[in-house]
Length: 202
Image (cartoon, rainbow, N blue to C red; front, side):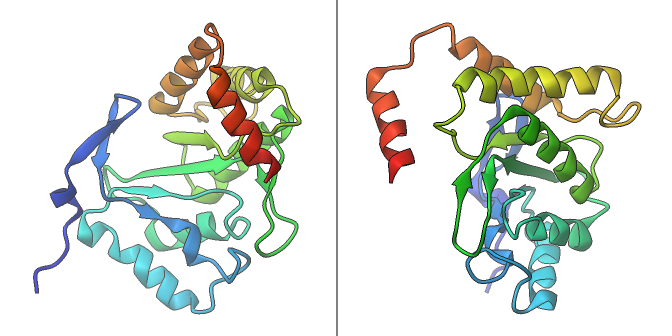
């Protein structure tokens, strides 16, 4: 049997800039039951992650809420220092009171704090792609996008939070934020707003 190869899936560009193989790895399920705590078989979880470069998987998606923290920590343990070309995307904006429990919390100060913690847990100088996990209906969109953007980019510019010469966001994240902000110059379509409101009340 031929060894699977993620390159066979083709490629695409994240934010129109960073090229990765279409077949990536979602790291939510390397944690415990209910996406909570340590995996039942930690050595097997680490073996799974270590196998990814052999399969030419060069994109891993995780989040600070997976575990919480466990997924990011396992990725670093298994793969750091990361192979050339490996892209690790992470997310913030959900809190976890317990197994299977997910709650939006997207206050700007919290999101900025979590972005910095994710960077440290992953052991990287910058996060190539940092994403808002879910829109928080209790926080104005401009605060979730605009204020967080300005806070992270300001920290990146002067190094106060991340440390000298340690940018928080990679070029793709910075470009993606710019496009997010530009999108607010146009009204949000009513059909899309209704869909967001419905999903956040379920």
